[in-house]
Length: 119
Image (tube, rainbow, N blue to C red):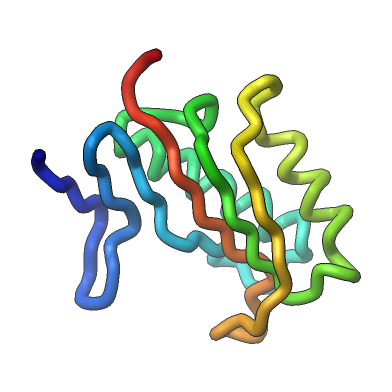
């Protein structure tokens, strides 16, 4: 089976498609001045685009990993953005954790995996 790499550079691919699954690498907001809700919304919009480029959408999500700079402070606002974005009845498995970010202005990074095609 072929492996398709979407938007690559010297360090990483934005997404990799293999065997009917798209693996989306960590996405973050470009607007580092936005609050957690704004950064989450922008990050999810980026994920929508990557999923479209791979031939699928958020209704086909399998897993999500959410990495937050300050989970105690920002969890409810991040969840507000997530809940408004995720498809009803199509919730992926999800893990959310706190970590140190490579860029101190980054408040959230999200990784997803989704199926391609129909059931």
